Every structure is written in structure tokens, then in C-alpha cells.
Amino acid sequence: MNEKLKGKTVLITGASSGLGEKIARLSAKSGARLLLVARNEEKLANLCQELQSTYSVSCEIFPMDIGNFVEIETTFRTRLQNESIDVLVNNAGVGLFKDVLTTDVSEAKKMFDVNVLGLIGLTKEVLPSMIKRRSGHIINIASQAGKIATPKSAVYSATKKAVIGFSDSLRMEVKDFGIFVTTVNPGPIATNFFATADESGQYLQSISSWVLDPEDVAKQIVSKMFSDVREINMPFLMNTASKIYALFPGLVERIGKPFFYKK
Image (cartoon, rainbow, N blue to C red; front, side):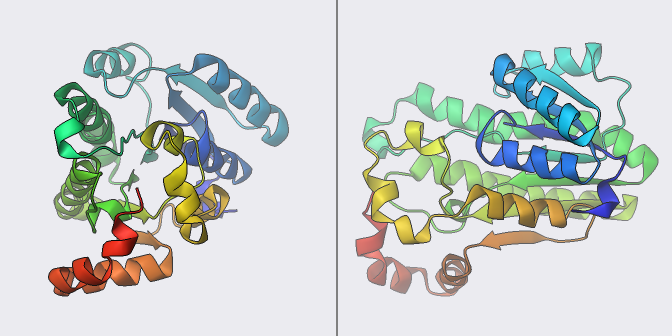
């Protein structure tokens, strides 16, 4: 539990399943008031009802597509205009493991719309209130793929690099307003993400020893809410590899070639 969250308002995107759902559960356990966002209204409603019953916390749902900017603006103008959001968790994301030649431009656009532009749009909506109150925490779920690009993930890696770059700049812009910005860079997580990203299922099986438990990732995130933490990187060995890659990219690409081509 994180005692700092008691009575605070936490907005989580992609909250209907996977990592977002785990973050919602742990936030509720810590006494936070929840605003849950995802496309699947039924799943959101069931989760919200369960959290209210189990933890006696306030919970509201906001069904919308993060990749649809009209929906974001409309929701904030009509239902969230008076909300003071203390923590924004930009968790919603999509990915597709395909090489550049076989990736359709519409598929690339969808990844950028959700992973990058939707994240930026939501951030812009919550920032004015945070700046006015001189308090808040923005947590952006990026990826180790944003630090080490591999074959068949060119567009997905590009979106996550964009999230890291956006977060690094934003962190400096809002620091004097008492607002924290944290990027979370996990390796592969055992969630439904891979049902779309890798329909064959072979990639997840081939890297099973590296796959993270979403509960463990969520615990790290929730425990750091309202703490001035720059990044959360998991797992340790993959993060170490990303640091070496930053210094010796050519060497890591040669040594890591067998691993990189597992997709």
C-alpha cells in the first residue's frame, strides 16, 4: 500500500485489463479515488463495482478510445472539467510486431495515435489543474523497446522512444510546479498485449524467462506514486543491457542478434 494515495484521485488509462487493471486494484487498496478509462465499458463497470465493494472507494468509469482525440476532448469538457486529478497513469498502448515493409501506414498511425498522441492529449488536459495546485504526478508507461529497438518492432519502438523523449522534456518543464514525471520501462509483461502484437505466440514463449508478472510491475508503480522517481526499469538484466547499448550500440546489436530475432 501507498499511504500517500489515500483520498487522492488517480486516472488510469487502459484500466480494463492487464497492467492497468493491476494498478487500479493496488491504487484502490491504498485508498485512492479512481477514474478508469478504456474502450471496454462492460469490463470497466465490473472492475469499478468490485473495487467499490472491496475497498469502499469512489470509482467512476470513462469508456473511450485514447487514439480518438475528439473523444478525449469531449470527455474532459463534459465529465471531467471540474476534476482535480492527482495522478495520471498513461498506460493504454497498442503494438504490432511486423517488419517495416509489411506494416501498413494505417497500423503505424494507430500505434502513434494511442501510444504517443493520445498520451500527450491526456497529459495536456490534466496539466493546467496540476500546475494551478502545484502538485501532481504523471506516470507514462513506455518500454525497454524505447531504449533498445529490435527487428519487427520499428514502429512500436519509435512510439516508445517518443514517450521517453516527451517525458524527459515535460519533467523539466513542470519541475518548478511540484509535479513529478516518471517513465516506466518494462520488458515483456504477461498480458493480453501480445494477443495483438504477436498473434503466433512464439515470441512470448521464446523469452519466457524474461517475462514480467503484471502484479510485480504494478506494485513498483503504485509504491512510487507521489515520489520523485525519474524512471522505473524492469527487469534488471534488460535494463543493464539498455545502458550498455546506449554506450556501445554496435556491439550489443552483434552480440544480441540471436535474442533480437526471436519475434
